[in-house]
Length: 482
Image (cartoon, rainbow, N blue to C red):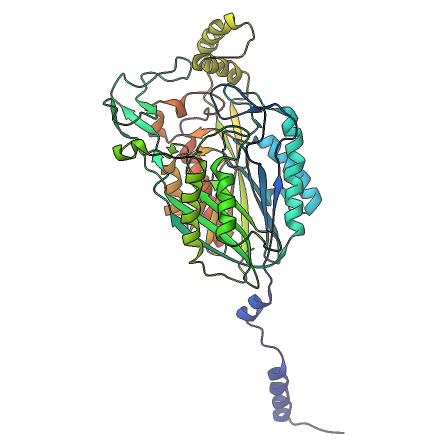
């Protein structure tokens, strides 16, 4: 029998402990694996003609100019997974997206509250949401919903160990406030839009003696999230820019699709394995277009989908080259449901709209006034409140917010400046298409984006409520644990 003194036992214990692996936060973090998977699901219509959304009146698309996609990204920090999807569509209704999310959850196990789906806001894609003079193309929607879910499933299948990083570029050439304050009596007033004596107008043109000043700022930042494989091959880029759209013939993804093609070439992703995917989401561009009416020199500027995409892709690529990648970061995602009142028309307004439309005898509207008279009647038959879905994501020190509206640049800039996560990417028209949210002071000026319709019907105090909800969620995910 061997008898050890207590000092001998302690010495043996110390040696044994020294032989055990050291368990520290840094070594534990190194043991974690971050994964990413991407897939661009083709959602180009296969049956024609299709209804085209984005204009005051209904349009028809009969051919493919360039292909549409649902660009799907799945991220996995080892503890949970999230999906972010950018769809080439003008607007996507909440019920359609909820259906797609339910299908995706059944196929992938990713919970619906950890899936963010947004529309790019191309004005030349099939109509997925009834709005103004355009009905929803039900045949296309039936085709679209499962394709979005399948895209998420394919992205999950492509999950591979990855590195992640982010950066912020700048393109001031393609952002200008399209909403202007006019001299009294010089702005158009819509008799069925719920406003009177409007002072704001859209696109006043250059050198307009009745135009006083732009009603708000613009956001020229190009925010990008980049994923690479462990051996430094490009995997995916999610970018964000606050410019409304360029415009072109249907069916087209507009400059959003062209950006993705150019970004793929710039990063060398054309022959990547697994296939590289780029996506461009719409930022806070509710009052922003690409003409700067304060600058007379730009009046003769020529632009098209290709030139704008080239500018934005170049700004993104310059930022991309400065990215420092992390091999692991935590993912935290939260969702909040927000109930907002609707600006309902009065009984007198409804009666006047019905009287105005009586000569149409059920025919489709062909003028702006007919469109808004019809919207007055439709809104009167809808619920007096809407439930909005707001989301926030933390990826390491970076934040992402999903808002289901067309958001003014001033709102987006406030969210970015007050967010505890830097940088923060604002994705508009995410998880629904609930219309414009002008700040209260902008409602007082009237103008197109305040005229009451399904595309702009939330209460005048909606913007601060939505903005505060987004910031609250950002603070929550910033301090939350994955």
